[in-house]
Image 1 (cartoon, one colour):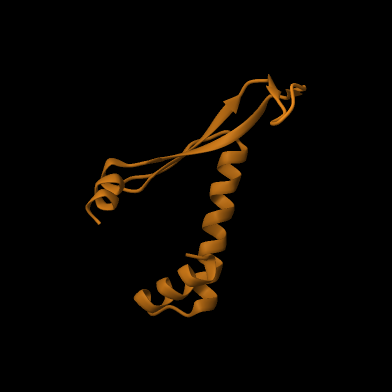
Image 2 (spheres, helix red, strand yellow):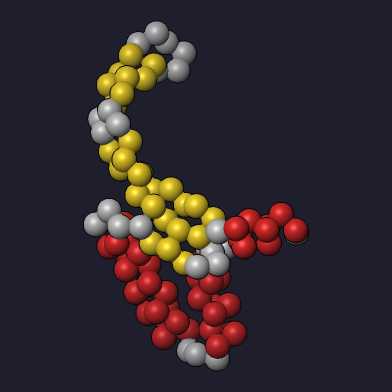
Length: 92
């Protein structure tokens, strides 16, 4: 599902104009992004949580060669689904 499809679906379910729903969705995504940028976890009960994860510096091999490259320390994002979301997906 793309963001535009999500906006259309929410507008249909709530009866709100698409322009208002778009502002709400964009604001929500901006808030999630800001929290993750500040290294804070974002949790939605019954859905899951987005957690910033620190990845240590390491050496990796370039595929197909024996050459090693140093990868710097960085942060990534991990999504951990809730038990409820897992069970809904497993049932379908």
